[in-house]
Structures are given as structure tokens and as C-alpha cells.
Image 1 (cartoon, rainbow, N blue to C red):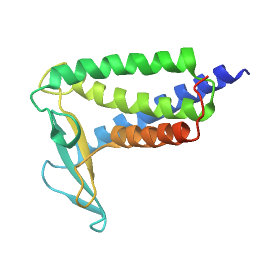
Image 2: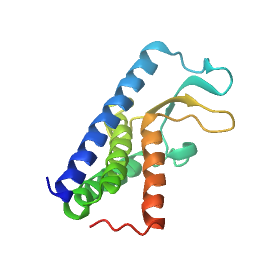
Image 3: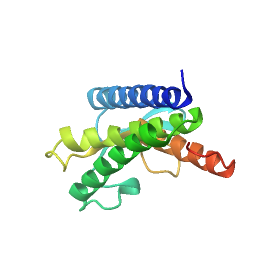
Image 4: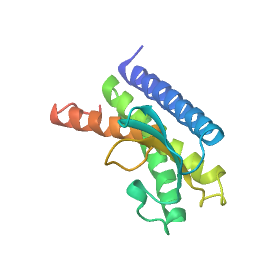
Length: 159
């Protein structure tokens, strides 16, 4: 299998698995947690705390939900194009697959959750001390960013 195809497969698998885990955990959080009532998972280190976020990271831009939704859709298309058109390295494929999973995980929320399409609130439920509440999609984006930084500092080209 050629390098570009392998990288595309890695990206696709990472995106599908990441998106699936994100949506499954959000569904479980909505079904089993109550708003505003945290549950200790690992002492005070990790708590489950259900919130719905209309904005971006750190609840910024809460009045820009439609714009954030549109920007995220464009970003998902650009990432998919980068994978197919430019990526031959497996670690780049993994980074872009995780990035796609994170973007799409939050876009799905914005499209299908209340109050309406393009205005839906993102489900967040993971809480660390002194850090905003987040979700698996956010974890995917963070790991993707770390991999992108790693690849860039190692001077590994996309193709």
C-alpha cells in the first residue's frame, strides 16, 4: 500500500473512532448526568460535570454560534482535503484524523442539539481542576495540535 493511501486510512480510522467515542460519551453524559451536579471520577482530579456550551473554547463567543458552526464546517472540509491531497506521513495522517474527529464531534452537536441547527450547544462533561469543562472532541483537537507541533518541529513534511 502506498504511503499516501496508508496515511489516508490512518486519518479515516482516527476520525471515525474519535467521532464515535466523542458522540457515545456525550450521549452517556446527557443520559446519566444532571446539569450542574458534578460526580467525582478520580477524586478531585477528574470529575464528570455536564454543561452545554453555546460558544467556543473557554465559553468564548457565546453569541457567535452560527459563525462558529460555519467556520468549523469549512475547517473540516479543509482538513479532509489536506489528508487526501497532501498527506503521506502516518503521524500527519493520525494528527489530521484526530483533528477531523474533534471538529466534527462539536459540529454534530451544533447541528443536532438544542436550540436549533447551527445554534446547538456543545455537550461538555469532563472537568479537571482549574480548567474549563471539556469533551472527547476537545481532547482529539488537543492531541492533534500536539502531533502537528511535533511534526513541525521535527520538520516532517506533509508530502
